[in-house]
Structure formats: C-alpha cells, structure tokens
Amino acid sequence: MIMPFNDKAQIWRGPRLGDVHIAFGLLTRLPLPCFGTKGVEEVANGSAANSAWTWPLVGAFLGALSYLVGAFALALGLPLLISGSLAVAAMVIATGAFHEDGLADSADGLWGGYKPARRLEIMKDSHIGTYGVLALILVIGLRIISLGALLQNPMAFAGIVALGALSRTPMILFMALMPGARNGGLSLSVGRPSVVVVGMALALSAALAFGLLGVQALWLCTTICGVTALWALVAWRKIGGQTGDILGASQQLSEVAGLLTLVSLWA
View (cartoon, rainbow, N blue to C red):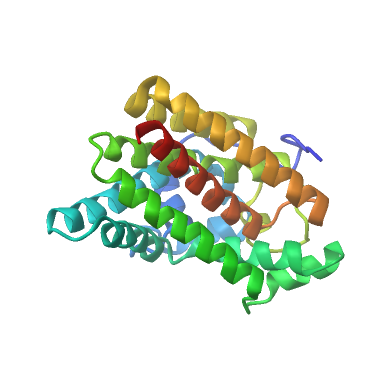
C-alpha cells in the first residue's frame, strides 16, 4: 500500500516565494495575478508538488477568512447557524468547492461501483449521484453546525485557523505515500512531493497548530491522523491508490472531524 518517497518524487530545489503563489493557485480560486503562466507550467510539468510545504499556510489563511466572515455575521446579530453557514460559504467560494467536489466524486465512485475500474470511471464523471449528494449534505451540515457552535468561543479563531492548516496536510501525505490509482488526473499532474517537502509541511502545520492551541493541538492531530489512516485504507481497498478526488475528500473529512473535536473539547 505504501510507496514512500520513491524515485518519482520531485527533487526539491529549496523554498521559494513563488511556492506560495502556486499553492494559492492550486488550492483556491482567488484572483492572484502573480500566479500567472509560470505557475500553470509548474502544474503541467508535474513539479508543483514542490509547493506543498506551503499548503498549511493556504489552509490557515482560508481558516482565518472563514472565521472572520462568521464572526462578522455574528456581530451583526445573525443567529449562530446562519453565521456558521456564511463561514462555510466563504471557504467554499474561496476554494471554488475544490475539496467538496472531491468528496462528492469519491463517495459516488467508491460506493457506486463494484470493481476498481468502474469506481474510477464514476469518479471521473462530472455528474453527481446519491452517494455524493448525501456526503455533501452530511459533511457541510456538520461543518455549519460545528462552526456555529464554535464562533462564540474565545478560542475559535485559533482553533479554526489551526484546523485549516492541519486539514491540508493529509493531502500531502497521500501524494507522497500512496501510488496513483490511475495514469492521469490532477494528483499525477501536480507530482509527488519529496521527503523534505513533506517534512517541512508537517513541521509548519504542527508549528501553527501548537503555536495557536498549545497542547490541545494534540487532540486535533490525533483525530486527523486517525481519519487519514482510515480513509487511506478505504481508498486502497476500493481503488488501489489515491486520486485528486481522494485528496480533496481527505481534507473535508479531516476538517469535519477536527471541528467535531473542537466542539467536544470546548462544549
């Protein structure tokens, strides 16, 4: 199941400011002129995986954006559920529903087909089925309710930002440690991150989480590790590896599990 850092991993050429631009271009739909054609070329030639060490920074930014929108709505006197809905909406708009799409496709494919080839075929289909709809309803519903419950907590900003960083880390681990389930797709075009890139991403996400939450970050890390391991097992048994949809779903599952953990800790 595991293919750690084989010879197909990209050779790391050191950190660059452009890595941040490429990461935002990959993981968000924010209008960044600095991404430009160079970033597109990095994705096309499979070397964009070198930017993965900055993905926790993108996640932290998205978490901060989500919190600020929700907190502003709450300050206007809107109910908790509406404020939580707007907080989720802000993240969905900023990412172009990138990860949500992966969750829906994964649910449709993994449980809608009987053989790996058929499951991959369904995942590639742009139509959404019953499994995908139900997965989106459940996950988005839990995110809205959890964020609504957290927004009034004085530690909400720290928790949501830390979770934004941590929930992007499983995608990097999937790319580095699991083989691709198909010979094409976004995951393959991005490339396989090197051991240095993965190590920097883990260190950065841990630094953000523990810096913001202290020892409470251990609960988040433990929960996300467990969810990631379980999702990796499902993907391996169902399709024999990872795809871009599997990566996106890993972020969504990690985020909702982390939110539920924070609600449990701070209720």
